[in-house]
Amino acid sequence: MTSLFLSHASEDHELASRLRQLLQDNGLVVWMDRYEARAGDALKPLIEEQIANAEALLLLVSMDALASDWVRREINHGKACEKRIVPVRLPKIQPNHVALLLGEDVVSPELNPDHLEPIVNQILGALGKAPLLGNDDTAAPAEVPVSELELGFREPKLTLAEGKTNLTARATVTWKPPEGEPVYGRSFDYLAPIGKIEIDELRWYLERYYIWPAGLSKQRAQRLEDQLPFWGQSLMKAMLDRDESRKAHTAWENSGGDRRISVNVENLGSPPQFGKSRGPSRGGGASPGKGQRPLPGLPPRRRGEPQPRRQALPGGRPSPTSRANG
Image 1 (cartoon, rainbow, N blue to C red):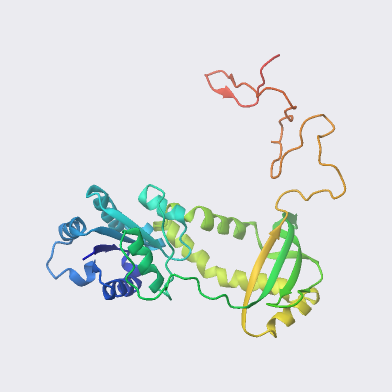
Image 2: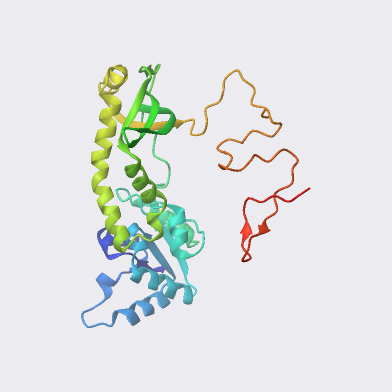
């Protein structure tokens, strides 16, 4: 009989318990400290013993697990015992988060907390076991027609006005019904009600927080998460509470059934010059590629010109801007 050690953060205990019960209902033996450990047991040697006796270590990856010392100890002991580690990740956790925790890239299916059944067969498949579920719960659900309101942004950029940096763009609201032709709103100039400070905070949250989701970083993330509903409401109000958007927005609100809102951002780089050639520049050098801009203070390198050689400055430090002669 397949036995697993379920490693999880204490904050995820309720979800881990439901997953454990479902796995045990399908013939697996799953060890969790909350259920098997008794009062007076020395927890560290008991956990190490159970990991050593298990066939594999099932890892429930969440933001709390990324910050948990206990989870890291269990992973390290599992590796020391040469156990197979099977990670499953919660929504919003990306594969690179799992790689950060395990120190290597591994396949990590996403777990849906509201629909746990499909994960059982995926766990068994990772262990090389035959599926235990009688029905095909891993099959994709039937597609449900969705009425979509698309918020479209073109040529977004940061602008400085009255000493404040704001995000601006050309915007259009479009209703896309499940059937029939879309309803387009009129294009307008959009001024986001959040500025550079909020944008920088969002960038940190999305790109950097997962690297160290603990301590002061966790407190900072919590403050930001508390602000997200207010930012979202103000962004939506600035987008939809206007004449240009009203026709598409009203049609979407009256459509009934399943509805969703999507965001489409276009032309993150310089917008193309329609009807004009995008060939070499006047000086004979190649134009910068998409998303590329010459560094300020440096002349563009001409086509065929060798890469600059770094020369030493006094003290042995190389000069980043010097060019080799001839």
